[in-house]
Image 1 (tube, rainbow, N blue to C red):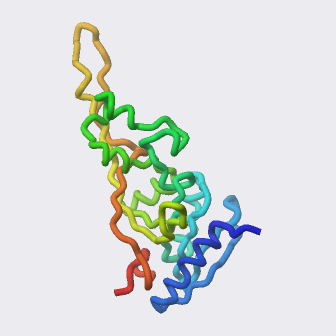
Image 2: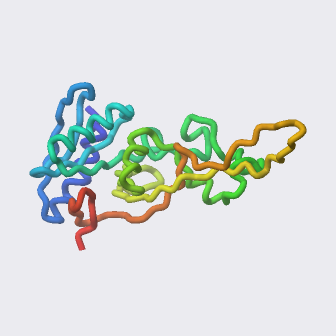
Image 3: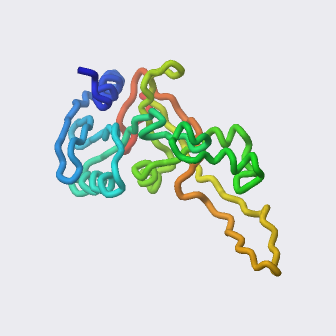
Length: 209
C-alpha cells in the first residue's frame, strides 16, 4: 500500500521537531462535516497537515474548532502544484487559463516582468483564508525529479490588474474597469527553507537557532 500524503508529511516533520526538542505525535481524527483530519499533536499545540483540498466551509470549520478549544494551531500545506501552490502563469500546470497571455499582449498584467509572472499562484480557499491573518504560508515540498523534500515558507502579495491601456473614449461610452488587486492570484516570494531543527513557537514553525 502506498504511503498517504499526510504520512509522508509527518515522516518528514516529526524528526525535525524532535531534534528541536518537541515530541509531537501524529493524530488522525475524524471530524463531523470534514472527515479525516490529520495533524501533529503536542499538549495544546496542533500542526494541521493540509494534504487534500478543503472547501471554504471545511477549512473555516477547522479553524473555528481550534479557536473554540483554545488550541494553538499552524497549517502546513502540501505543495505539489495541483492541490496547493498552483501556478497561475501557465494554464497547462494549473488546469486553468493562464495569466501569461495578459502580460504578453499588453493587457492587464503588462506591468509585470516575465520572472514575476512565473511566480504568480492561483490560490485555493484554504490558502486565502490563511492569508487573512498572515501573509506567509508554510508548505511541505515532496521530493521530485526537480526538487528536494523541504519545509518552506513563502510570502504572498496580491497582483494588481492595470487597465490603463484602455482608452477612455466618451463617445463610445466604453466601460473601463478599475485598477484593482486580484482576490485569487498572488506573487510568491520564498522567505525561508526550514531544516535540521524546527520548533513550534507563537502559532508557527521556526528554525531552532
